[in-house]
Length: 416
Image (cartoon, rainbow, N blue to C red; front, side):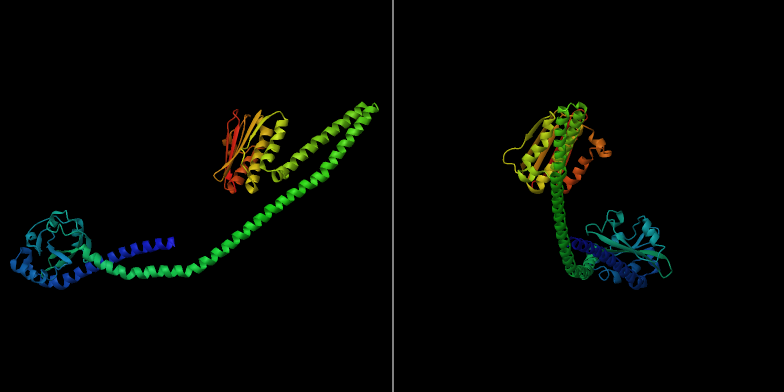
């Protein structure tokens, strides 16, 4: 509809301009008809000498007959710029330099039209009449002497004709646009319905994909926990028992090797359990985001890093927003553990005005954010991927870091 309105306005303006141009051409043709049919037949050779009889002869056919309400002034010029006739006799005999357009018109057989320059000296008696359209063309006396006929028409009369023409064409233009809109509305409605159905189907498939992903992550986590982790735990216990028996039997080397194997299995079990939490954090779905964030920070605390988690009472986040916050916090904690060499980590969760805000700050070695964006460093690609994830969820992710001055990550996302 906005496009149709814009087209209608442009079309109306273009129609108005076309109508004005047509009206000016009509005024030019009318002046040509008057020149050939009225003025030239009443020209006398003696008019060049300002003969009163020749002037009276022209007055008889021009004054009060041609110079009506629309045609305001008539002038006849000689090629050297002398006015030999005007319906205002005060101009007869006056001499003014002809402009370039008037001089060019003397050598043409076509009428030329332009808006009058009322500040020019030769137009001193036309001032106060508003805008005037002047039309000039060459005519000839019986002895073939060339004169320049110049007529002045009130521009308001010309535009009145243009307005009449414009009013005839505008309804056609607007009617065609309206008809086009009426034809397009059913098509637009049908397209919109199909688009809505496509978007609804896309959302359904996306939800199905997310649910399937969660279900698959849960299945993998359950299989790992009930299968490989239990088997490794049993193997670890067996090695510990075998090591004790070897030590009792005095086989120190074998007991030490068995103990090393048991330690390796225990490290593998811890790594797998950490992976299980990342695949499907049970605390996030069972006890909420607060406890899930605390579980993320516990391994840092176990490594001697001072951690501080601040979640004001009353802050409750669930659903997709909770999963997004957990993913961002998880990536931040992973990078701190692997790269930051920090001694303290502060994590703050806040909610208000329909937004959830997470801040994770550490006092580690930091990094150059601009260099990371230009050329991702191995191990930090997750931060760049988080930007896309957060942007897709309608949030913003900011990372402030300077080498040697730690890192601060801020997440702002819709709470629902």
